[in-house]
Length: 312
Image 1 (cartoon, rainbow, N blue to C red):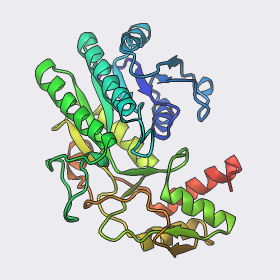
Image 2 (image 1 turned 60 degrees about the horizontal axis):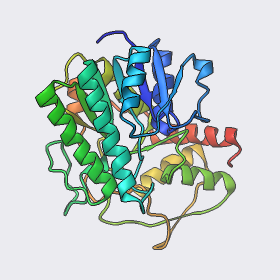
Image 3 (image 1 turned 180 degrees about the horizontal axis):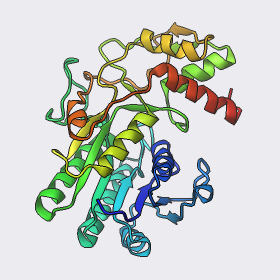
């Protein structure tokens, strides 16, 4: 791959900010973008220029690519989950899909080296059983958010096949860690434990929990950016297995001993999926992805972040 700057979008979010920090630490030149200057990362301290881009706004892609000589893009911008703008499906489509089309068009015109785009486990939709899920499994999303991810993957495949655009989608499971502010089971367990509260959680039989720490997701991004060639246009990124609620609670308790869960049918049902564990063999084979952070260590990092923020 060439050594030109990497544009990272969505730097005000969990993944975008973490990708910036990782790439800067690796000595990679980075340009950051989001709709407004982020409060979760000090870009100036990292020597990273900022570019405002409120998706979709297609001409802004050409502007940032031309101004900074961008060669690769990590597109973490957009709607981050079905819990965001759930009552405005049209906006979800405009931001996620029109934003991606604008980027793919700019990549085609400027002949960019690679685009890494974030799909989601939600692109699969619910399944009748909990069998392991490989990338070849048909995508049957049952939310508008999930549909934008499935449609985005189809566009990536088509632009690669017809126009030679080198883009890849990462189907990420439930990502947690310092910086996540949307609905998150592990953050809730940690925060409640620190405050001496019991967490009221649904047992959610017939569904799986598949949590992956932010550092493992960022590792996948770094590996994909540097891979000389990729065998497919979409990869599962997750822990590679399902995790039980008891296992998660036991692991969080290592970091926060006061963690206590009460099973309640009216309790939290966040971050569960009606399908089996995503198989990560292809990511392991093609670019050496191996999730390494235990839930206990991830919960400890989340604990430290909450304490630093004064949220516990």
